[in-house]
Structures are given as C-alpha cells and as structure tokens.
Length: 213
Ligand SMILES: Cc1cc2nc3c(=O)[nH]c(=O)nc-3n(C[C@H](O)[C@H](O)[C@H](O)COP(=O)(O)O)c2cc1C
Image (cartoon, rainbow, N blue to C red):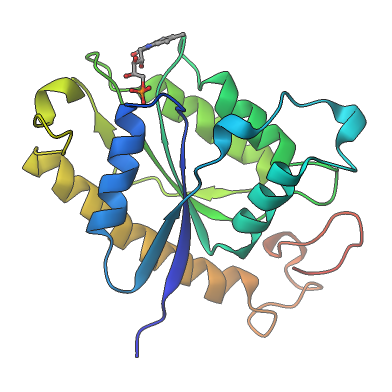
C-alpha cells in the first residue's frame, strides 16, 4: 500500500472570489489518491501579530499551528502585492513561527503556486516566499513552477479553472510534492538514517529543547 501524505493548503488571499483560493481548491480536487489536501479557511480571523502575546496566542493561531504541525507538507497559493506577499499571509507566517524554538514550520516540505490577473502571475511573490522559507528552515520544491498569469482568461462562468496546461502543471506539482515529502521524511527526518552526531545540520530539531522533532 502507498504512503498517504497530508498537505495543508493555505491561500494568501482572503478575498471572497480570490483566484488563489480557486487555484488551491483546484489542487485539492486534482490531488492524487495518495495525498489528502486540506485547505485552511481561517486566515482572515488571525489578528495582527503582537509579540506580547506570542506565548499565549489566540485560539485561531493555536489551531493554525496545530494544523501546520500535523501536516506532512504545505501548499501555498499566493497573490503578489507590491512585488511581495500579502501582509495577511506574512502575518500568519509570523504568528506560526513563534515563540522562538516552537515554530510550526520547522523542516516542512512545501510547494508554492501563484495566480494573478496580470502578466507576471505573481513570480516575485514566489521568490519572496522562498526567501522567508530560508529562515523558517522549510524545504520548498524548486520545480515545477506553477505560475498562473492572466487567470481571468482561464476560468469559466462558474469559476472553474478550465485551462488544461495549468491543470497539468498543478498535477505535476502535487506529484513532485508527494515524492519530495517522502524523500525528506526518509532522508532527513528518520533518526535511523542519520545520527545527529554525524549530520548535525540535517536534523530538524526543536531549538529550545534541542530535541529532535
Ligand atoms: C495591494 C495590491 C497590490 C498588488 N500588487 C501587485 C503586484 O505587485 N504585482 C502583480 O502582479 N499584481 C499585483 N496586484 C494584483 C493582484 O495580484 C491581483 O489582484 C490578484 O488577483 C489578487 O489575488 P486574489 O485574486 O487571489 O485575491 C496587487 C493587488 C493589490 C490589492
């Protein structure tokens, strides 16, 4: 029997008719049988981050962190706002990265998609997200890239993604994320494969307690 992996999908837009949420929902529908994609639907409920409360975060943040931690991998579809990611997404990422030593993102495999009505499809937001992933110690897939420019031309009147090329790319991304996640779990996270003494930097660990995750 194949390993089943769970993926937490996060849309960087809380707009009601968001194209990025549409792309994420499409990915959920196209996901292979060995993958379960859940979409986090409470991003808009997360308050503005204030470090005063990082040790006692609101319930929605606790829920968000738990969902991230229990997922095997993360799938983000984000718009580009002013050459970067939307504040609402960065805010949620910041909450889930705190307090120091208890980041929910630690060691997570991830895949990125972006959609926009414009010509560039959100490429600069993707690059910006990859930069953030460095400090979060996340492992984003490099390829395939799912960039959906001029998305308004690629949907029907019922808000379904109709463009076959885009759908094929999403399927390729999900297959690659599946393989990537298994590879990382075997090669990086299995204590039997690598000892911390021999490969100290290859282990995800809780920086506060210094224990392996
Ligand atoms: C504040 C703001 C800034 C934006 N900046 C950019 C940008 O830098 N590059 C771009 O391609 N589109 C930009 N856009 C257009 C969005 O990418 C576009 O509206 C996209 O459809 C939003 O995603 P959504 O449909 O998932 O909400 C911006 C939109 C807003 C509201």
